Image 1 (cartoon, helix red, strand yellow):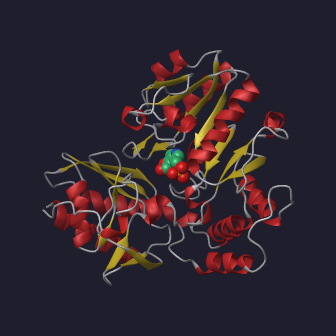
Image 2: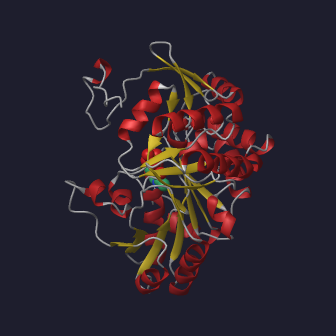
Image 3: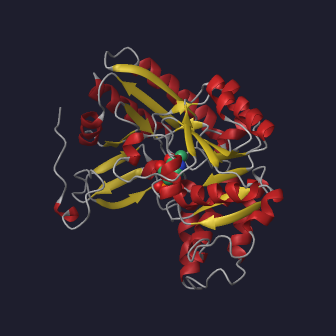
Length: 388
Ligand SMILES: Cc1ncc(COP(=O)(O)O)c(C=O)c1O
């Protein structure tokens, strides 16, 4: 097994908040990334579920390039066609009516939590053990993992964590003091844990009964990743708020909250804002990304591609002693091992394949929705060699 390599010199003046790999990101196209030494890698992680159309998709690159010469920033005092067009696409493909744009996933969740408290006048936000919602104070407080809170206390008040996929715990916790439940339909960072249909529907029922709001955090699961535009649509859920980011700009930082029309007054003038939220470059990227996803019908192919990949992985890897479970939805797949994955991820890199972990024991695959089957099969072979 190759040992975890030392951080490169390039990181010497950076806070070591990331355990960086010994690979320099030089250039990337589609599902291939070239390192600083010229080595080519098959990308099965898409920048942690971001470059859903593959790196440097020509339509997105062109849209951003054109906007670069038209103006980078005006402020949200202006009307922007890009925001209107992107909001139209997001609301057309979801149950929401209104959008507020931000710059990242954690900011989207912050905004959703604020909006839920303001609208309901209640404080309690319920989330799930092993959930991940971001690193800023509200989203961190909503994240149900002690390791993420460590050293940053006190956490914000009013957050409660209950076990995922546990209907009894849910029904006890959601009450008349609850402002919102924030839900990942498939837990991502927590280890690729799909929500069970009965549980997901019980969440919606409990929230409605209590007069609370349902926030679906679709930051990792959204925009086609699981085979639907948003993952909650597989189960017919109608969240009041949907948070999105990651894949929205195909790598250009942006995010948003999509909400139902009845929430309009809670986010009136002066209640929320962001200097850069919905910036013209970000909106050029987002509009082109969404239009391409929809017009080229990439999402339609995800379910069958994901099912075929899951079947292939199960056949090839399940018999191996180190493999405990293989699960997922669409192109969001976890391979749970009986031991930590860190060394296996480095060994995969030696074979020219990039994947990431989700929790200590799960190898996570989040390839671009556009990835060629041949590259996926090369990835499966590399996984077999490394895990054997
Ligand atoms: C479900 C979920 N919510 C929120 C976030 C935070 O997003 P960001 O890193 O853009 O702040 C992530 C990031 O991994 C995520 O997976």
